[in-house]
Image 1 (cartoon, rainbow, N blue to C red):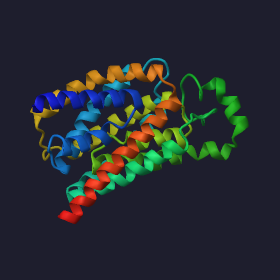
Image 2: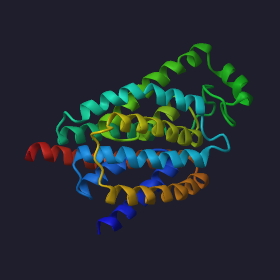
Image 3: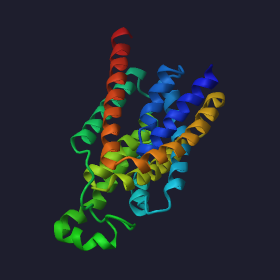
Image 4: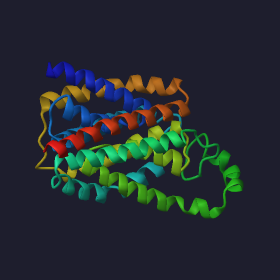
Length: 277
């Protein structure tokens, strides 16, 4: 029964990660806690491994076609490495209901941001190399439309958002895609198609940092983690097909609705734990 559940849930997570570039961790943690019965701390640790490996496969699938903004992704991810260690330290020092409520609150905020501005930017800020919008072909238009001061502020945004996402990866056990994608689309004005691939790169970097900070103390139920991860990797391929056929704005709205639903559910469970506990 546990094997079947791990395979089914893993496939679902893989499809979400492949299609949306995030949301895998935000689903994995509550599924591990409320369906497979792990504690919040064990679920966050397992989620980091599952989502990190699955996201790396997603990056490999999107390397061609200019679907990954490498400099933005690397800067964003590396900015989060020190914060991921700090988040991991805090993770072991809070009670499960508090952890779940923190998780729920951030999820609702991110979902709201995606629903308020789910559309793709017409002319994204030129923060990276790559084809399509934001490439050298669009540089002149971007320069004319926006003043230099706005473009100069982008690196600072990347560092701030990167540190925040790194901390949350360590603290909540999520890849951070549920915050990375809104940050890339809404704040940095990167098209949804490129935001997905870039988000997967950032998630992979943060996952490595978070796992490194847990080295020697992390314990995994390999009978659950391995089939879950294998099914998630297979699901990424299906998710990639979905993202290739569905408009970016539609994916953004779907992502927003998903985040709100998960946030409300986890919030109710966290409040119940505080009241009952």
